[in-house]
Length: 305
Image (cartoon, rainbow, N blue to C red; front, side, top):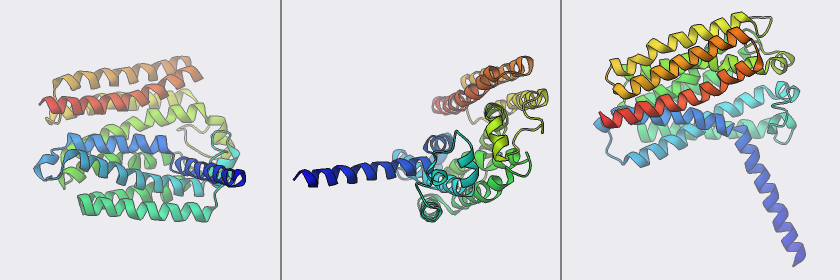
């Protein structure tokens, strides 16, 4: 009896660890953030023109499909970066890098989740959103990932699949590549530069050790990097006005988005002045809150219109 209980506990422990490994493989927190923008973009879009099923069911299906596609891309990323992940302290305990999961298992998982996710987008929504999802998966997994070791242009390339979730959500709702989807794409596309450079600033030593070239300056964190962050933060201001200009959202969200954009400019300027890790960390955390506040305010204001 005691032996059976021990076996049961051991099996439960192994199963729990395996589930934990898969959560790490798909980078659950990152995937959730990506799918968040997909779902909110879907809700902002005039989906009611073509949808008959309940909004809640549509959101649930979109969330699952988005997590599968994003998880597939992140799994491919971890297999291709197995050796560099093992070098960096922050990523050394990832399942493939640590040896807890084989490359074959990760690739099989990536294939299955990718096929199911893209298939769900096609079956439950439309072919256009499925194709954009497939393109985003391919671009992130097979172009952006290896490019990180070649040139800092990888940040620009990576910003495309990083912003495509907004377009996927919009197209899933409207069945067309209309201006609203491209505006939301533009907001998230430009946002990624100060966001990612702040992360690269803080993780510069690890990234350099792994051979990644992600900062705009070869010499590492410099004033040039800070200037680039300011430039893209300033670009976010006029782009943030577009949802109001094209009647995607209302007046209240216009001011909320404007405040968030000006705050990003402010923290980027402070990074240029102080040139320290604290300021870079402030840019990084501000960017996390920025995305959540901006998209939720656009959706909340859309409900009022």
